Length: 170
Image 1: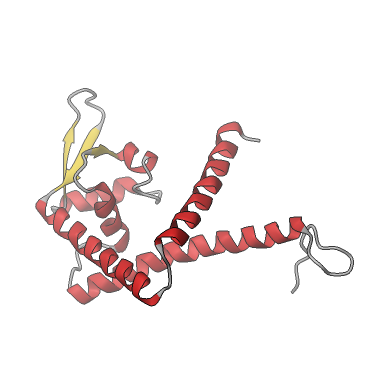
Image 2: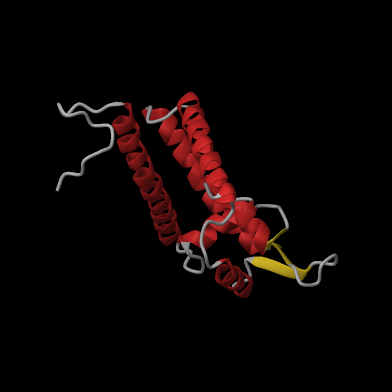
C-alpha cells in the first residue's frame, strides 16, 4: 500500500517537504532498529562469554554509569537509561551484586547507586566490545570520525527539537 507524502507534486516528483518527511521517517525507523541491534549485539557477546546474570539493558546501564555514583532519576536525565522500568533493573543489579546502593546523606528519600567490582567487570566487557567495533568500523571503512561526528551533530539537533516540543507543548 503506497502512502502519499506531503510535498509530492502532481507529477509524482517529491518536493522539499516530501524529501524531509521521507528522510525523517527513515531516520526514526533507523534509530529504533539501531538501538535494538545494539542490545542484540550485547546479548550475543554476553552469551558467547557465558555471562548469564545480566541482560543487555542492564549491561548497557552498567557501562553508562561507569565510575560515577548516581540516583535513579539521574540515570534517565543524563541519558544513561532509556527504558521505563529503571527501578526493576537497579533492584536486579543490586541483588546480583553488580551495584551498590545507599541512601543519600543529603536527601534520605534518594538512593545513590554505583558499580561494584562485579559491575565494573561487566562494564569492561562492554567497553572491550565497543573498542573492537570501533576498530572494525575504521578497518572496513563503514564509518569514520568525521562522518560519525556529523551524524551525532544532526541527531543532537533532532534531540533538542524533540525536547523543545515536550517542554513547550507546541
